[in-house]
Length: 177
Ligand code: 2AM
Image (cartoon, rainbow, N blue to C red; front, side):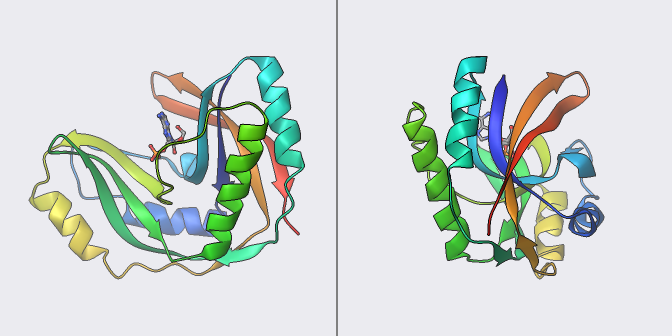
């Protein structure tokens, strides 16, 4: 199974994000059902490991907290823009939850994640040099700020790579209290 841990987003927020998702030819906008905030990408694991991951995630105790999406940005690689995303307002509780997830996964036997946690919600994947359309997207949405929402659970998703893009399936939710 190809797994990742993420926050599900409320539907009104997804709809708001979909309103941002226009204006750049040649990029693949995420459909509303795929919008999420990744806490930890896991990758391919055998079923027995997936069960251990599930147990480890169940054991996490953390409080629910409000989260606000704000701003937009991009990731670049080799001079090409690879993704456009919505950002997150500074949120120590999110960082705290992410580090609990990281610790739990290491206890379940996974190698530590070396990359720094840069919370974002991917809106589009692309592969083109920054151009006027991309600049206009960034400028046009620089003041984007969504209604805060309460994070009450996190989710273990499986991902299947298909011809039409990835299909993400929630495997289990873990509640915060
Ligand atoms: P991204 O949206 O920033 O690309 C499921 O693939 C989720 O895991 C995506 O949201 C993706 O983040 C994240 N992810 C992190 N590292 C990944 C990797 N090496 N391969 C695929 N997805 C990864």
